[in-house]
Length: 356
Image 1 (cartoon, rainbow, N blue to C red):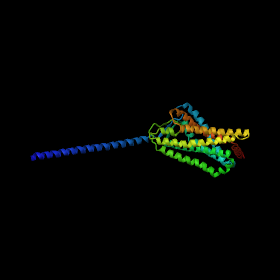
Image 2 (image 1 turned 60 degrees about the horizontal axis):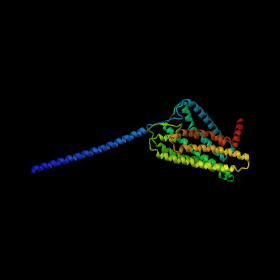
Image 3 (image 1 turned 90 degrees about the vertical axis):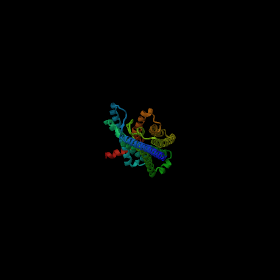
Image 4 (image 1 turned 180 degrees about the vertical axis):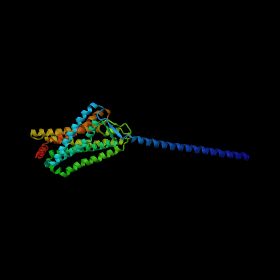
């Protein structure tokens, strides 16, 4: 009996040991599998991260693969760039050099001309080089820098055009209060406010864009690094960037446009009450041309950056981009400054000094 009891005890101990070993082995196997899965996930994430940072260049498709039109586009944009730079530099130099142009209106026009010089130079030189050489590649960092400069100057122009319309409203509709309101300090504050507010908003947006990862494809269907086509190439979550872009675009375009439109409505209604028919027609012609250019500028911006960007609008958006990046800087000095009698007189005085 004792022998049988001892054998059963030994069998029980052996079975317990086998059971413990079995559970220990299962536990170790499960732990090993979990650790292996975590390691595999880590390696996959690391590999994905390496793949995301592997895209270092973008390809700007521009206006399509039409080599026969590249020379024509190059000559066209070269002439536009030369005329834009010459006209804006002439206005900026006249505003600085001529004492008769040291007024609030020409202070803002001088700011606008300096802005247009920088604004045009962020887009057209790169476009001209790509049309001439055929090299359409641009690094990711250069692309972000180009958009940063472009967006900063574009936003500042939106605010500055609204400030200029407010200045003309006070001068025409409130002439008795104009001198006291539009003093030198207030003009500097308005111009500085346009630059600083634009800098803050665009810096926040660019910080969010710089956090995106790009893992292919790398072709941008545009002639410069605009925000919407760049965001589409990101393999990160772009919902926050898209939302912030929509909010900032609405802030930067709609309120300045409404302020500008309201100012010109009051200006035109005041002009229509001028008794002189000749003076009324001349003032109405000037203000209507201003309003047409401003409306085209803001309307194209709202269409590109606020309206839903569907595939059907891809080609029209490229045309709209040409309007506010190329056409507006060319036409602004002709509409706002070179038609003014004071600017013509300042140019005549400058030419006389050069002859002497």
